[in-house]
Length: 636
Image (cartoon, rainbow, N blue to C red; front, side):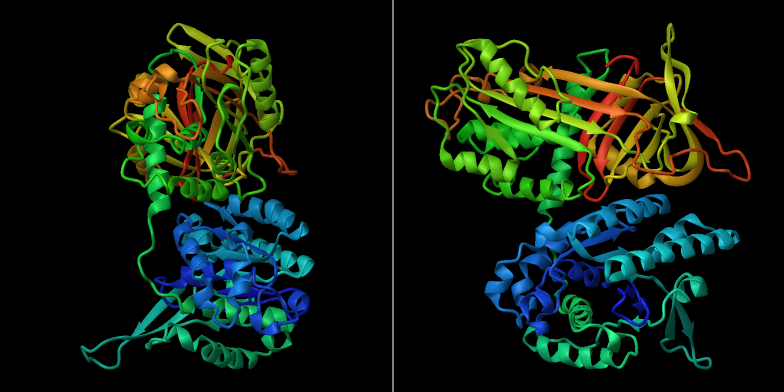
C-alpha cells in the first residue's frame, strides 16, 4: 500500500506493501468506515483517530465487495472497543462511503481529475483509497510498452500528490507484489520467498516510506485490540515521515490499517448480490415481453420499475404478495427484508454525486382511500417514493397532478406521463426516469458526421454518427452471433451495446438475452484498440404495463380480490404507467473533449449502423439499470 498525506507531513508518500492478495481488500475496506470516526480536532479525543469525514474507495480489479463493507460497518462497535458505543451508534458510516469503479486508466483519470476533487472541495470526504495501483497498468501495457507505462505512472502519481497537498487529504494506494522464491541447496523442503512491489522503480520512486503488512501467524483476540494498537503505533512512530504527522492523521493511519486485520473472515451475507441477480432476471423477462409487442424502439428503466413494484409488494399480503414475489423473481426472499435491501442497493447506486439518473416512484390512490402512515413512511424512506390521493372523478385534474410530479422528479425531462384516465380508476403506480449519458472516454462533437443507418434491407436513414478511436472493451458471442461493446460512463455506469451480425435479426438476439448471458458477456470483455462509430439518439418511451405484467403472471393485484392491506377500502391496481427518456450524445464534463487517439497502426472499426440492443448497468454492483433497443435512431 502507498499512503500519501497532506502538507502537514514531511513528504506526501508512505507506501505499504502486502504479500499475497487473499486478505488485502478487507484492510482497504476498513479505512472507509473508519474515516468517519471523530477526529482529534472536532472531538478533542485524539485516541479515537478518524478524519471526521467520508471516504472515496476506487476499485480497479473486481466488483466492489459491498457486502463485506456492510458487514464491517455492522461490526464497528466490536472492532472499536476503545470508542464508546454511543458514539459509534451515532455515526452513519454508510452515508459517508463513496464507491467508484475504474475499469481502465481513462476512467481512473476521469474519476481523479473531476469527481474526487468535487467531493474533496465540498468537504464530503477526507480519505482516498485506490485498490489497486498495479491492476490497470499490468492489464493495459505489455513489456514492450514500458516507456508509455512509465509516463502514465508519473501522471497518475502527480495527480495523487496534487490531491493530497491541495486538500490535505490522506491517499491510500494498494499495490500488488511479486514473489521471488529461493531454495537453499538441493533440498526438497519448502521454499522461502521474498516480495517486492509491483511496477518496479517507476512506481517505487514516487513514494518515500513504504510499510509492509503481513498476516500474523497467531490469533489476536478482539479484546486485545487496544494493546495491539499501541504496539503498532509505537512501531510506526519510528518512521521518520510518520513521526512528523499530526496526531489525528497519524493515529488514523494506525487505526485504519489495524482494525481490519482484526476482522474475522467469516462468510458474509449474499443477500444484496442475490437481489441484484433477481432484478436482472426480472429486467430481461420484462424487456423481452415489451419488445415482442412492437417493431419500434424500446427503452425501459427496469431498476426503477423493480423498485416501484417492490414498494407495492410491501403493501400486499397473501396470494397477491406471493404472486408479486414470483413475477418479480423474488420468490424465496422474506418480504419484510425487501425494503431494507432495496434501500441499501439504491443508496449505493445514488451515492455517486455525478450519477446522471433522475427517477421517481409514485403511488396514486383515490381520495376515498386512506393510506396508512406506516406505509407512507416505508415508501418514502426505503423506496424513495411518494403516495398522493387524487380525485379521479375529475380526470384532467388528476392527469395534471401526475404529470407535474413526473416533471419535478426528472427536471422537466419527462412530459405527459399520463394522457388519459378512467374516472373509475382505483389505484395507479407511476414511474418516470431520465438518463443522460456521459461517456468516458467521451465522443467529440467535431468528429460527428452524418452517415447511413440501415433500419432494414429496404429502409436507410441518415443519422449523426459519433466517432472515437480509443481503447474499448469488446467481446463476441459466436453462439448468438452478436458483438458486445462496453462504453463506460463517468457516473460509474456503463452501456453494453449488442450489435448482431449483419445477417442476424435483432429479435433473434433478444430471445437470448438473460441475466446469466449479461454476466457472461461482461466477463468475456477484453480491452482492445478500436474505432467506434455510434449514432446519436434520443429515446422517449411510454408504456401502460398492466397487460404486459399479466403475461409475467402478475395478475391478482389487478383483480377485485387484490389483498392490498395498507390502504383502507382494499383497492385493486388499475394500471402501471412508465415513461423513460434517455439522451445519447457527445455530452461530456471533459474539458479537453473526446476525440481521436493516434495509434502506430490503424485499429479496426466497429460501426453501429444497424438495429442494436443496449443495456445500462452499474459497474460496481452489476445492477441492470435499464434496457432498450434502437431500430431507427431518427425516431424517439
